[in-house]
Length: 86
Length: 320
Image 1: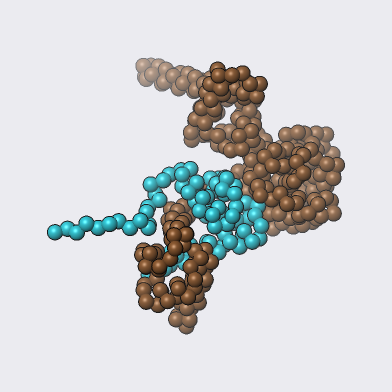
Image 2: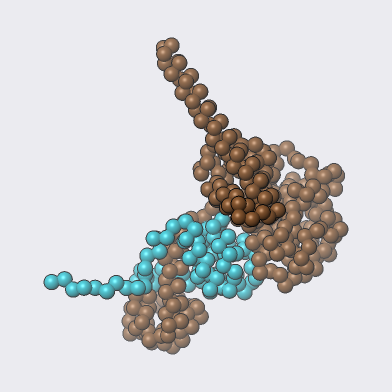
């Protein structure tokens, strides 16, 4: 007999989204964490990509504190990759 | 040694995770002590946390997933037209309204952005901007072109005499080291002004804006072909005026529009005019109509060209 398994809410794959939706979702989250305007982040995500935004946040014209937050988020994401592989 | 490094990494992870989720470090540490670390993401409710903290973990998890998907996705932003530079700096200065900031974009030979840096803040005048600092950075990034920009928190985009004077000084100094000053952009809120478009001099001996040979900046048609070549290959047949009008529409709508979006905007303004007459809507409609008409012409030209190629080929086959 097969038991019914309730699916985890966490880890919902975001690959269902595409194009602008992905940028919008990422901008939403980054805006929440950094306090930057969503439309500003969205513009740079759309035109430069997430990697450039996380590794070269100065392209966005932001303060040192905001740059530091983005660098910390990048560090956290990298360590999340390591912990999830454990 | 390995253990030490693991502890350092773990402590840093706990510190950052605690900062961005609001969950106390002690709670995280004791959870990790008794459970595998990945349980934080797989079974976050086991942490006994509130809704907000749960939501933050969900967001981090989602961002991580996007980060994995989009990590390799990177494209250089090309500023080979004033409209694109205006669009870039309008977004760059968003949220920086507390004072004046002076920024420089260092570009490669194809006008792709290598780096943008804020080089001065406060009252941006000649005293605040050190020409040697701009040159030093431009040489450091091996830039072949530079676009300078600053914001006017006051609301006007009209350049002051000091703005004009510093532009010429920088333009001359950059030219001495064979780097082009393509433009000076002034931003105020959502409005912007381009020295190159408005024909303000960028160099001391220029009467208006003299184009250098092989300067890729503001070759409107080239820029438009680069942007739309995949979506609409027929774009190569449009006129230079249409290319310029499309680029202007980017600054008006504060985004790079696709051909589809241009067409739906044209329909939108047409529908607005049917409901009620508005001078601004009419202007926008007329502008978009001439763009759409030229796009249709470009499609026809391409079709005719393809038909004539086919005809020539079949004629050649018959002859053979």
